[in-house]
Length: 455
Image (cartoon, rainbow, N blue to C red; front, side, top):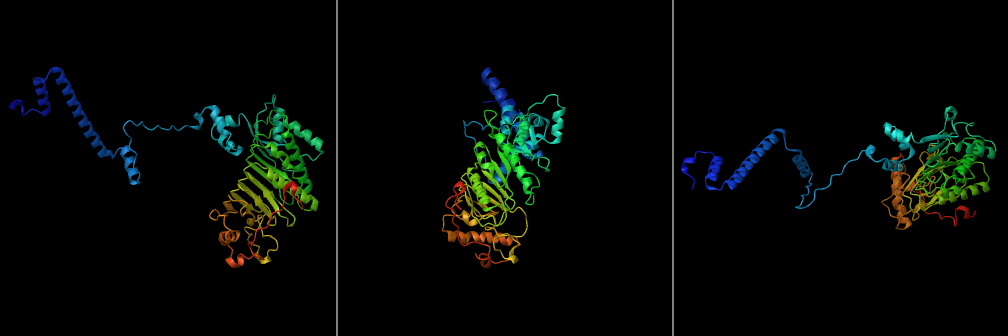
């Protein structure tokens, strides 16, 4: 026992005294050091609690309390379980150059131009190594720059766009001289990385002169033929992801579809369909349907500026297109057979009164959704993946039911859209098939389309 005369000493001093008198010296030193360590830990915890009371709980406790208040209980790490790896956030400029160049391939040319304007490094990487956008034929500023240069460096061109701002921009000479001029200018360019070609002239409308449109179409046809000529291991159209082109009654684009394996967007602008013979119209329709059939781009946009009032059933059949944009007059009468299409956008080239067949004069302020331009009845069981048609969500209505039941359900959705646009008719007069705004049956498609169509 410890003598009672040491009862007034502090507890730690008493233990030290006992260990120094009753235990062996090495063991005594170890036990004294352990007690001092425990005392320092208790003091540090007291200081930490006092600091937390002054400045609030620690960040870790705040995060835990916030998660618990939201009903999320943090997972507890089991003994022997490794700590989760911390994901590092990479800055775009910290990536290796090869990785960065690979990532830039997934951006279109407009996005690349915006990205290049953010910093000097990306400006040098994009605009310093490439010609981002180039007018074709060459504009006057580019010709003066070529004339002033002592040496010409052939930088890869990313986008060719049409320079059809006036009648003098595109030559209307004989085809052989136009082809020589096109080849002479293309020889000064590197087209190995060409990704976009935009050949639709700005400001084109239905009243543009037919002779002027014919000159534009001839120039574009010659340009595409020169780009499709393999002057390297691959032709210049092999990497093309976006193509917007002007066509007329000849519709020459079908022969180039095989040279566009990487195409993501195809845009067709059709002009000069008025005042043509019946045979020319039938030839144009066969070539247009064949071009749509051969398209391998997931997005297709067709713009028809004007058309004569021929009530001919036109059919777009394709197994690749997922998004279709149709801009055409109300009497275009287009029918669809696209199993993979998800969205169909319908618009008119000129906003005005509805010109649908035999529509009452007093009921032309609003267009007939489901009848104008594209026949909605044609999509039943021919477009099973369709979710949106002309801005109306039809994903809640299945096409596995009968046509009558399907028709009764979707017409309520289109009538609601009609009322939201300002329509005043009730459902029953609105849904009349005669002089109304809806259909009662699905028209049959022709036995063959494209080049096999019989008129």
